[in-house]
Length: 111
Image (tube, rainbow, N blue to C red; front, side, top):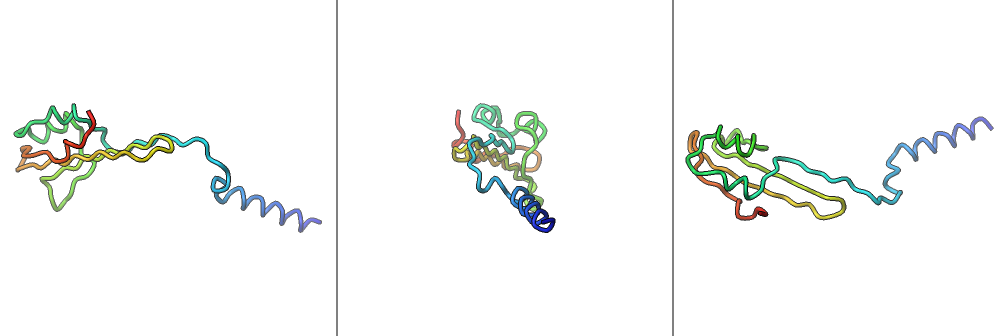
């Protein structure tokens, strides 16, 4: 009797502790935002010739900095609301020394 109770208790703890969400229906998904929020109005404030500090005041620190390409800053923002597909925004800034040279990917941003 004692062994069967222990076996049932162990089985239940394994079932409940090991991913019970995989077999239960999910009705709610949380909204997930990652990265630097960017939109077209923020990028419109940027001008070639701005320093890195001026760019950081507008967009914040870049999400990705490549040690092999110190003159390239990547700003990435992903957003998923519930069960909807993920939205991704990406802007790349190219510097020449300490000065902004060009902006890539701004044309794909929503207004």
